[in-house]
Image (tube, rainbow, N blue to C red):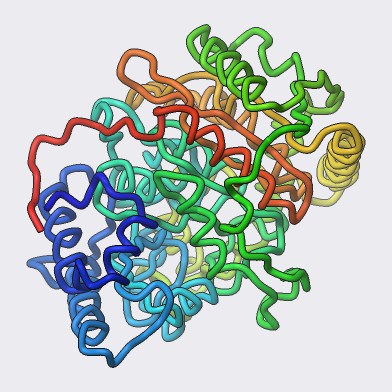
Length: 495
């Protein structure tokens, strides 16, 4: 049986009915992961089969057997889930795809991982990512880039590129990613899957290796909005271990997902279609607007006057927070340590060897912006603009329920195309960073194809109203077939 055509929800139905055992289900995906290691979707620290991928497989097989024996029970019993390498999982190397954390094995689970474990889901491996989540292509990973399964000469996006590749290639039915400026939604767009960035504070960040603490958020990636809703039911909620975790009630996100969109007001900002957008992307998004009109939604033109400043604002705030967060990696405790004759030299050598070029670039940018004489001109000013961007969204959501646009200005670019041009790489997030700055939820879902590569549709919503986003995404997917597009894989695995 080929399980890759089944959504996570459909797989779970088979697991619950007994038509599929947890052992058979997970063995299928574990074999498929091994068969498609050339995609580099999963991090494998170690050699000769002794690395983190082998450890994850060993733990997954043990857990699946215990589930089939009735020793472990839960609402997600037996469902395979891939975990981004920046999210801690006890007993498995968690490196944030950096040499700095090579061989680091957490003694605890991130809260979202613990919640999935409590629901009896099964972690099948840690997925590749841009180092410390800094990047838009996964090319900044210490372990090499992941590949886009729709065209392996192209990037899968980033920083959660490994998670996107894993889902798109049928290596896992669902994956967790993290999103600081688009790192769930942009790779979801590039790989033709659905990815949700929840409201800031909806999902605990405890156990997430920090990049920019006021922007980071964990969320699900899957084929469908319905699968994302399923995952949200089990990873959301207040956590005393995270001071930024919101004390908001968690609804059942799968309830009401099939309700009519009649009367839903969808905002469209004309500048989303300004110079720089690929004509094929614009056409696909405008076609999606027509689908929503047919579904009963009302399209309303809105204004987001400070959106043009979002990328510049983000690339001041995020590096500043990264500079602070990454100062802890000095070689003294659990990180990579370089040889040196003095303590100061050890610090310098360790950070010089342990961090990649993009991480160093952002640390330098952030340190400069926070330095004496420059704080007011850069970080303080960016914080003020951030507040104005949030105000724009607050004003817009007084008129509309959802804001629609493209996820990215282009389809997935070629490997190496932007590695020598950081500005071009940063502009891949031009449509996504605003949601992180404003702290609002946003989702990307497939809405077309261009030259064999997927196109993503971006929906943004009110704070803590993921339910409306998921409903709007689900209804679109019921009316279209784009989320059913699958890459052509050379080697198949049978259950």
